[in-house]
Length: 290
Image 1 (cartoon, helix red, strand yellow):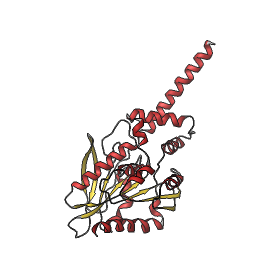
Image 2 (cartoon, one colour):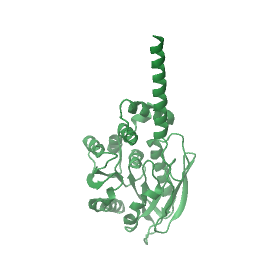
Image 3 (cartoon, helix red, strand yellow):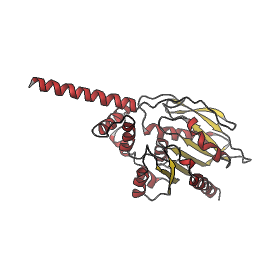
Image 4 (cartoon, helix red, strand yellow):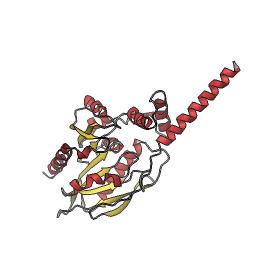
């Protein structure tokens, strides 16, 4: 009997250790260097999110307008502002100023202990406040183009009316279980029984309450927002499946398109992408001027 007890005890301790290690590793995004710069005139900028420093680039608009419209570009988990460069040229050529930044614990921004989607949300809000503080920017014509977890955080950010005209969310996960499944898939591990335990530990490490977790509800945020939103997801996304977009549209009526580009980070290569995105921003910014 004693042998069985100790065997069970050792098993449980080992399981807890494995789950803890997987949690901390999954909650520590890989920091890629910001090793490229924009192809257009830019300014290195920084602003505060909470007590932490956030770094980024500001690209002024190539237009004669005294007050320019601006698009904030928001990267996903384990990425940085340099990896959002792929979105810059089409938007810049349409006359938009651009703000790219590293979410905390990414790129050159300050680190936090246990980043979650809450950090993305709060950093997006901080970026909006910074953008509105710039004299050359029209604070009534600010939009967001966000990828993956950056899209999740951006949609949560616009749940309250903070003056964002239009948001394009590209390839976003919206269910915590999907995010954990994607992380475990990279380790070739099943979701059960590890997934629910890892999710709980992540929120404990981040100091996030049950009440806050309930607020991470994308369909509800989309129902409440006053911003125009366009959702895009590839049917061939092999990391965050397009079933996440299916889940959203089952719960809320929101403009959306499915594209056919391969992988998680290539939606913009589909011919339909910019044909939809550029008119979407133009329409909503023009409506503000009228």
